[in-house]
Amino acid sequence: MSNPPLQAVRGMNDILPEEAQLWLWFEDTVRDWLDSYGYRNIRMPLVEPTALFKRAIGEVTDIVEKEMYSFEDSLNGDHLTLRPEGTASCVRAVLQHNLLYNAPQRLYYSGPMFRHERPQKGRYRQFHQIGVEALGYADPEIDAEQILMCARLWRKLGIRDVGLQINTLGDAAARKQHREKLIAYFEQHAGVLDADATRRLHSNPLRILDSKNPAMQELIAGAPRLMDELDHDAILHFEAVQSILKQHGVAYEINPRLVRGLDYYNRTVFEWVTTRLGAQGTICAGGRYDGLVEQIGGKPAAACGFAMGVERLLSLLQEDGAVNPAVPLDVYLVHQGELADGMASVLAEQLREQNLRVVLHCGGGSFKSQMKKADASGAHCAVILGDDEVQTLQATLKPLRGGGEQLRVAQSELANKIGKLINKG
Ligand code: ATP
Ligand code: MG
Image 1 (cartoon, helix red, strand yellow):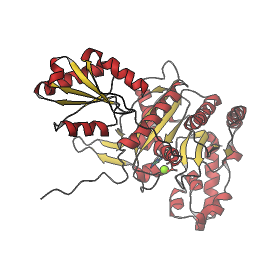
Image 2 (cartoon, rainbow, N blue to C red):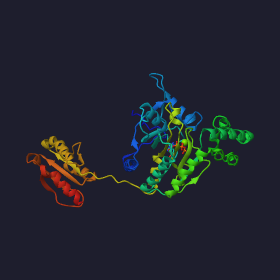
Image 3 (tube, rainbow, N blue to C red):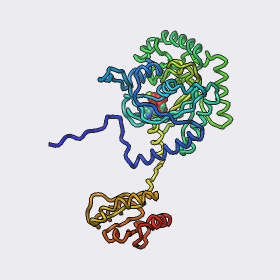
């Protein structure tokens, strides 16, 4: 009896070779783009102590309340979580290794994040982000830099139809005042609040503004506005960000309802949104988080960052027909005979030494069936090694694309001849 086939975990995707080509191209493009702004790569573990995310993201948030893959390590009882986002880990790493001691840091990371959400298009349980963080920078120039960076990336990738929404969440004092007014307002209308909102009324009333429940939209529209509580510095900061955006002709819309789902944000927040991906339209989101470094146990340091959803970006590109065709192989090496079978891998290594991409035929078979595989491989040419050739230190070169005669070549000349063939084709 055979075993039933096993499947991947729901909401966690395999990325097969054809699609992976597009990912590779995307990752190269992103790396060049980050280089051009002087952001440096940092790599953190996928697993962190659960307490880190609770402390950084906030206990009363969607992520911490219901989306985290948390577990107890049965070997030592540690409470661990698969990272649902990267900012908390990045700040943890920066503090642990004292990177802010001498200089501010422009950093980026990329990789999988894990959230237990209902899988649907653009929403997965393992998804990928590129995260960009600037730590130790208080000035509005860095908020604007990060927004301009995004705009440049969209241009590089050829992504249109994506709009920028910005807002400011002000600072602690204004938020506290706003919070009190919000609670008072929602208490007056307690009958209209849904279960989520009622639960959050005293723990995180700001999040009620983010509710998508149609029955509460009118109530939300009339709620006290944080804008009205902002202090002078926060207003100046927000105006400075906007004036840089204007200077660069980056269009934006101020969305006073934009509050973001993580507690650590203050002042500038932004989202890049497209209408082309249905409800999962936010491809990139971020903002300032001046309090987080201290909250995680460091000396106070201002910071600003954002993360993009790779799957959502790639699905936009795929809708536009983007493909990244694989670069064809140079050589498929066919071999037959006792001597030849023994020497084939040596010849393949010699050719790779000359920077050629070579697939060595494996698994035997007739000359004819090997040549069929060579054709199917898409390689520029077949190199054929028989016992004859081994004895004379030669090989037979057969062009597979664009015609041309088969010819016998000294092994020492082979790479050179193949190079010419490829350049011609
Ligand atoms: P949403 O409102 O769509 O749930 P979010 O506010 O939870 O997004 P962030 O935590 O800001 O998302 O993450 C930044 C980006 O990562 C999002 O804008 C989105 O592009 C992507 N993203 C977030 N969650 C998922 C997911 N489950 N699957 C795929 N991409 C995601
Ligand atoms: Mg979410």
